[in-house]
Image 1: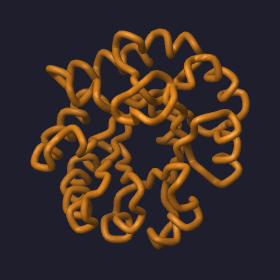
Image 2: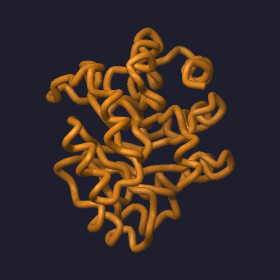
Image 3: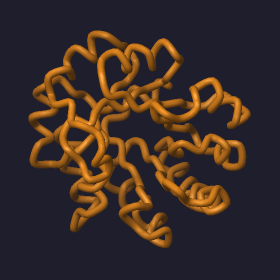
Length: 207
């Protein structure tokens, strides 16, 4: 958990943006660029495919020490020795997710308000995603919550907070100025001309 508190840049390998065959290459680039925490997100993908991809990516992240998180499907963590699971507001509880994994592991939760942030900490989350800060194609149905509550969220909870949603190099400084210490990048990172350079620029700004 101390390693988790040191994390600043959280990258998501989202199979809605990339092909499964690119997962290992992208994981290598994220690690080289200094991404601290990596998640595999594969909405609607079969569990067996996610297990295979997670195992491939974990070979890469394990060497760098970056925790690997699987989105939603805690049962993947029962078959691959990854470090954590991330769940949404409509998904299993953290208790159920850990039960499905069959072990104690890092559990993160998506939150979209101060009340949800406080509730996630009370539920036993090890970290939260807080957002979406800006409009994002990754979650088009979610209304952006803006920058206003970032500082208060850091006062209300003492677990790591990763601001998420439409964050890129162009607006990252405004997110930091609003009180963020950690951020998640998805499409900006995956679509970058050089994932390595983009990640390095972001980690420099977050240092």
